[in-house]
Image 1: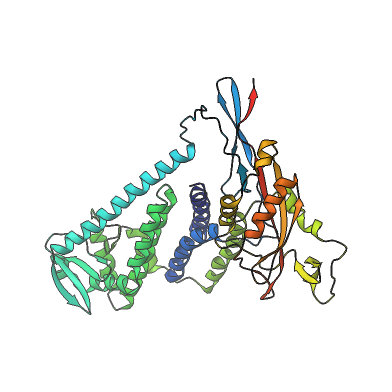
Image 2: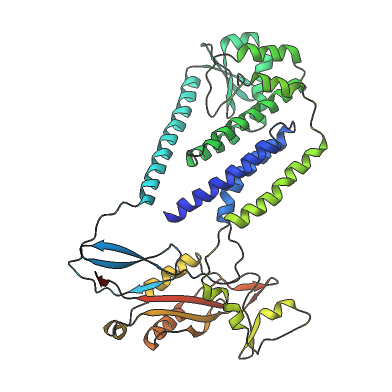
Length: 449
């Protein structure tokens, strides 16, 4: 739940910043295919950027916070873990009389509100599709250039839906050429699939008001593109513009339909008569590249680093460092029993499923030593080992220990880890140092007030 809410937060910020940049830079450009491509790219970038892992020089470790819970005259310090925190081991000897209050967290409330909005948005989406299909069901069908044309007796606006065009009987008899040419342009440019994607985005980001403005801008671009195609096909410009004015009054529209009567009269006519953008438009598109890089650095997926991990590579570089003037990466290599081991490789080793799965594996397999429980011993243990080029765990040692009992247990579990995706340097699998921290913590520490 935490990761999903965090993803939504980051993705919403990315989408909003990119879209506002589009509005500032490209809203009035007449290279419609480029504007359309940029809008679609903004959607994909807003989803992709928060999911991209940034290169990490170290392995993650996050300290556990203590949250006091007041119960009567005592304070129980209860460990709270972040989603990808350092694995912790707790004793199972808890007091049977301890009551656990039911707590509804803010995150649960936010998630409930979000899912409610998604459900309502999904219902509206389904209703929109159902309304269109009902109109098709009550229409007479004919075929034009392999496209189904549905002729409806009611005076409703013409629109295209996937590979179908719906048009009123009056429009079919009086203005069929211009309207059908316009709607055929929507179909041949694949505008329906843009709208389908945008509706999916609206369902997910229903809480972001900019997403609705973005959807309207996309429809505007579709209309500009279809108008351009229609005029290029030989339709008289003056008669076509008068037809738009005539049809653009008090008409119904559908979310997933590209309607001829899309009511942006002034903008559509202005774009038809506007001189085409010069080739200088390319620098505006190029502006998005550094912006994407900045957003990736700000919102890309990364693991938090503890203070020990930030200094770890320096501590690993001992007097036995191998230096090679022809290989600048050699300063990141240590010599262990005759084999070269990287501290930082171009591609660091990864456990299948990522750090979260690795920590889950440790939590499932580690046990609190009985003697440590009896003697109430707790503390942090950090072990270091080599992830070999074959994906095996080798040379497990204690980097920072606290007690022989706890140290031995952490080493035992580290030796159980298999199936690594090895690190790589210059496209070749290499041996790389890896570090894992384990926190052994006794439960129910009571402070008498």
